Image 1 (cartoon, rainbow over the protein chains, first blue to last red):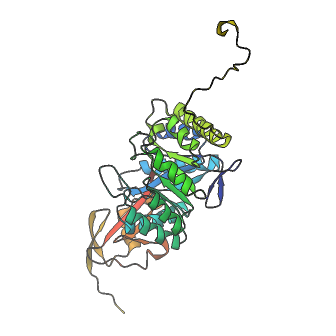
Image 2: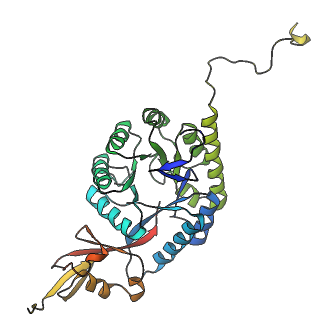
Image 3: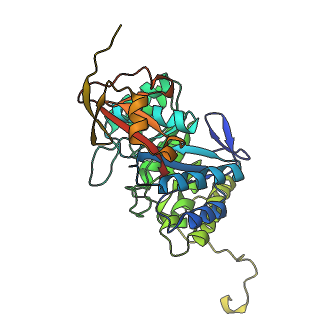
Length: 267
Length: 75
């Protein structure tokens, strides 16, 4: 992250460093109000089967379309639920036709228990999709080597997890996340999944991450609109803290108040 | 040239359907409500994406599986 620049996603400047999911809200109206309150310009969504008796999906889609139009934002379809590269590639192509975007949040899950990404299938799918002109935003673990491989393939954005999806456990391994930042200074890093509190997002931004993507922490809050504002402010605070340059930690105490001319009780 | 009428059993979103010499366009007209046909959706045949331009050209064979997917909320 560099001073005075906007978040860049494959050359597209984005006005907010908070990316937000559209799922799990108590109602479509609360979803809309929370997303507006967050100031986010990128909204994630997905594709699923819908039998002829169901009509709820169409209403949600209309809400999201209206919202993105109103905010002049961007759609970011995901490949949630895919377990193989082939499934993810097919879903990405279906998403591109519907949503008219090359952006794809690439999820390939390797374990049903903690929804951990499968690095082998993720790399395969990333390579194929990049070759077919997609702008891939891969969701991965905080594994430096996997991130390096994704970068080598041509991913300009990489999205390591903070912790497993929906857990709200925050940054499980700050050391790994900081290492990825320092070793891949030129890639756009977006912390994705597992964030629970605004302070988690602030911490990621203080590390120099470019943005944060979250959903549950806002959607499942008692007051999603207020939590959306809190995250927006936390992300700005963390970004400014990083840019301002954090002081070095010291092993010993140093008085803040000058010690010269100390009054009588020290004489 | 006459095409022999053949009953074909296939699956859309897991539901078994039998019809005569179906292509994807016919299958969608049969499966989706008229309202759904006006909505945004995308199609895969046996796990491979099929673009809208190919619906009428893509013949369905016995046992084929079609997925019709619609936009929903996601994280």
